[in-house]
Image 1 (cartoon, rainbow, N blue to C red):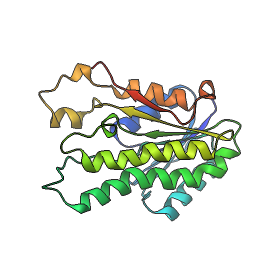
Image 2 (cartoon, rainbow, N blue to C red):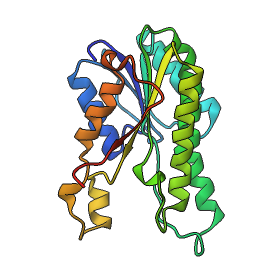
Image 3 (cartoon, helix red, strand yellow):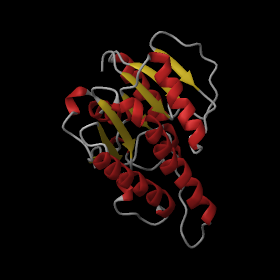
Image 4 (cartoon, helix red, strand yellow):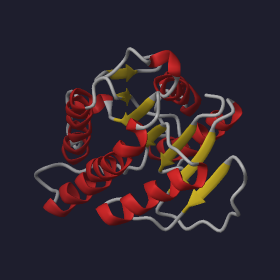
Length: 226
């Protein structure tokens, strides 16, 4: 990843922070894009673009263009921005379905569409999305989340077909990620069986690398030790 220019959405989250650190350790130049505001000063190898609502196509376009302008190009986009909510269908509400669709699916759509011209100009353009293993077969209470992540899966496959030969588009499908929030919500779970953020980051960065040039349209399960 040395010298690659990567835009990472959702960079302030538990997974996003680890991916940013891992990419920086491999020598990448990074533009973070997040809903949270940023007061950090730009550095030669990193710029933080905060206060962005990626559910808005115009803001997504402005953020991606700013990221590319900062470093003169864009080689990879990693779409991590997202949200989770556990809600049964019988007792839930339509607003949750709409909210998760906007945060999980539309953010990836808007950022990807904005990035296409920049990535196509790279000699190794990459898009890596975050799907969900639970979207392959949704359990009770997982309907809204699984539906929104299924949208990410199909976005990945369709965009990979559209951009074949120009930009690779793949998604990782993690099981439960070992984050502080998940440990709080599931205190009786076997944490050792979960996927660590670094394990997931390693797969994400491989897909964003030159070594993954022949991989596109893949939905890659990352199951941990279950």
